[in-house]
Image (cartoon, rainbow, N blue to C red; front, side, top):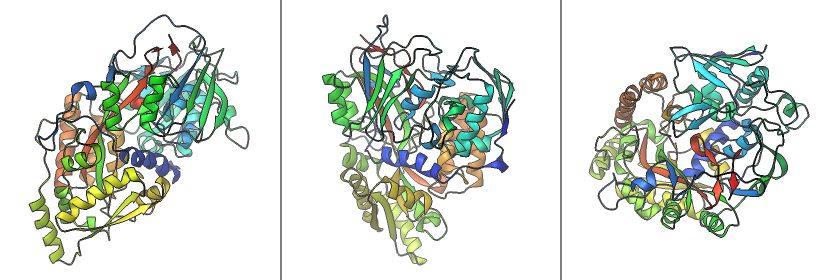
Length: 544
């Protein structure tokens, strides 16, 4: 049986990992994406619970007797350009639903139970320390090429994902010491330390199992165990899938599932309302708010820290001086950004976790202090700092809103902000995540309530390749490991409060807003199953 080590001394992820994780974060933050807010009562605006809460809205998700045949079209957020789970970011807005349709998920998140449940797997159990996890497979699962999905295939697929630099490759390599096929139906994961939320990793890229035959030729072939196979693919334009007749989960009601590209979010909603498409991913705060108010059905979920002013703390940058970082944070007014970017409709706060979050600490967070910002900046200038900051952004009408708003706030307290605008997201990723040639920028962490650790690690851990800020603090690293190991919500909440305290003390970034995403659906769509991070499963979907 196969054994593949992914220990800390065997890391082989690639620079491409930066593009997968960073591009999604930058695009989402640049889209002015947040929730409804209560108006003029300060940075901690109160959002409408119907808009913020995770769950079905306007009657979405209703059950019924499945009808067979037909086609659903899903206009997602970012069109896929590759069909390899290891070659892209694998969240719901960036190809996760498409990949799940082809490869399935070992584990999915069940919102009714607020827990992780087996999907492609049969069982997943841990020891008392949550450090050794045992996954069993059913004995009747085949890939679309007819070969058996066994433990060896799982081990090899996961190892390849890490070696190819998938989105979660570094976290996996840091946290998983060894993956072993104990027998044909059993996979054992030996972790470097306790991790009660480890199943979350199997709801995304590492849990999308690629068939061995996918890599037999010179080019990757999309062969998985999911309910659909590829029927046509125009990268960046449309992905066309057809239902499998031999799907392990039983009959697939749909004949076809397509993913067309519709760029404008308003057009996506209009297409759902007109019936041109049946499902659409919508994240712009105004579009989400108006769609729900108009009675559009669907699945909604929120995320924290979806808008942040990042500060480069590396040696030689202005942010290496803690006084400068604190001055920047004190100059950022979340409500001002809310008005300029989201027409005052966002859920904003200086806190890392919004007031609607499970992890909100109940404290009044208002870091906006322009007078304090001026004092700190004057101190730094007295020691030779010239007050200049380079802002990294994208030269587009949408992202210019945040760039100009941040420039206005910082220059109001005495900074000089020079806008360095890349022509596209790839250029911005290179500037911020590869070359680190910037002082401030605007980006998203998109930290989920269900699993806050993964994205906090990616953005704040000292050696994380996704840490664009160069923020390196041993105390933060230790706290993040405590978040990973926390065995109860109370324990996790306590440690996350300490993370918030350390962020307040060291000012690595300025939190601004949370986000609300709506997976809009036609009123007759049934059987779509949500999983973590907006990944939607269509194995039982149908249209009434």
